[in-house]
Amino acid sequence: MNWGVFEGLLSGVNKYSTAFGRIWLSLVFIFRVLVYLVTAEKVWSDDHKDFDCNTRQPGCSNVCYDNFFPVSHVRLWALQLILVTCPSLLVVMHVAYREARERRHLEQVGAGGGRLYPNPGKKRGGLWWTYVCSLVFKAAVDSAFLYVFYRFYRNYMLPRVVLCSEDPCPHTVDCFISKPTEKNIFTLFMVTTAIICILLNLVELGYLISKRCWECRGVGRRDTKKDLLTGGDLIFLGTDATPALLPFSSDSPRDQVKKTLV
Image (cartoon, rainbow, N blue to C red; front, side):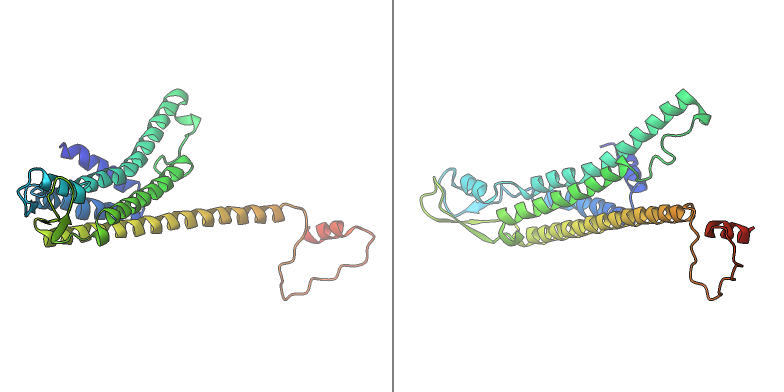
């Protein structure tokens, strides 16, 4: 694996993320990816070999193992981590596309022709939607895999003994899982980190949406204030001072105001 390229991708994702996104990134790559690579694969390496059943019937152990472990924990986690990290890389690719488009624009019109993106990495327009969709996708993927784990392995726990009566077993046999306590500890750890990542994604999503709504509200207020000031009507903003009485004149009220202001 080329760690230089990997480090460059991580630095790019970290650069264009919010504070919540940086925490999520650290949690994923330190407490999920590294734990998976360093520890989880070794714990599950002897899973099939040490799955013993109290029978000598050929094929019974393989059938019982396939029945209880339809998909290995390690392979499910690998697929989950791949799907969870891809959306963040899409954000980096979107920023790279903006930067390349900006360079081509400057080459065509020159430095005095204006810019397409004042800041290509700022989450505005399409990039904002890409980032928001990536958060939704990551939370949905983690939630889906938590549900799959729960359906395959009730309460995410592995029993010490499995009862199996599948063919070609001659009768109901007892099968024993290798190192169930250690595997349960790592399973609960991975489930807990996935739940924390989901919460971080939802918090970041709420932060981005609320910030966007606040900015739109501020723009609306400024536009309303501008319309009031340029509308041609005089508005008194509640002062204690009583306006001076103007002498009687046949001029219209607007003309009287103009004379007073002059």
